Length: 120
Image 1 (spheres, one colour):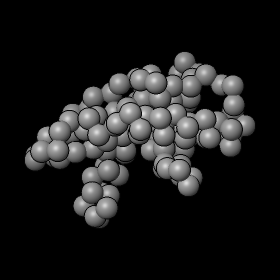
Image 2 (cartoon, helix red, strand yellow):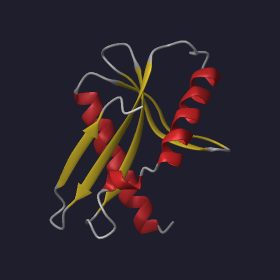
Image 3 (spheres, one colour):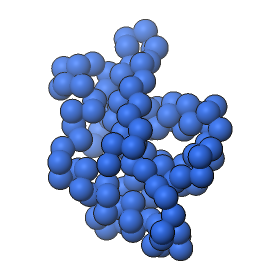
Image 4 (cartoon, one colour):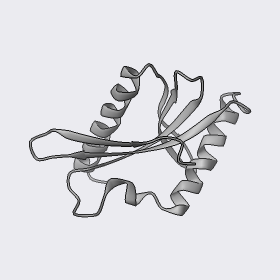
């Protein structure tokens, strides 16, 4: 991954962390990583559920909509990562949800968010 892609991804994750905080969530973890993969954001939602948030950020639709990059295999990996996070943090049995977010950054620096909650 190039540094340009990393900075784009980091920007999208910051935008979504701020988005969640503004809606009363608490960020529990950021870029939690194990051998199998990484969870972009883990948030405690105002409802008491833990949300595992996958953020996909793009600068154009040249490679499709950001959310199109979440394949069936990626969704299954997110599920396994969520369960691993819950077990590692002694939260197994807590209610949780997996959310996917697309962030599109326009040339003028503005951005649009498409947030899909509880997709799995």
